[in-house]
Length: 189
Image (spheres, one colour):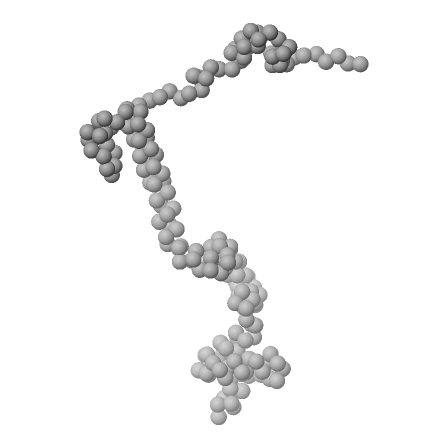
């Protein structure tokens, strides 16, 4: 059977029931700093004139207690510093607000959309075929339809006709690898 030995800290923090009230209060006063030590020193700093943009007369400001003047001036200083600190970020956000709104309408964030676009662009650089597939997937279209529409636009073919050709390729009525330009010229004739 081991006997528990009390450390000096255990002995100092014993419950008041185990010690006399006088000893307990003496130890508490010795171990805890007085409440006055916790309070910051009150420094009154204020201007003889009311802060700018404050709608108060000089007479009313002069009649205001010094503590209130000091706190008012402190708050104005802190708010002014906060505005100056955050103004550049706010101005940068204004440049991106349009994209933020677009992203929000699409159910995403600017950061998520930007990461997705950068990833697609990097994929286009490293593997163009997969990059185009990723873009088409993001747009919700088949890459073959995109190629068909692109070729039609280059050759000046009307979009409705091109869509019917794309549908024919998808449905298998037009064999893959068919020269769309020749096919369209035949339809136009």
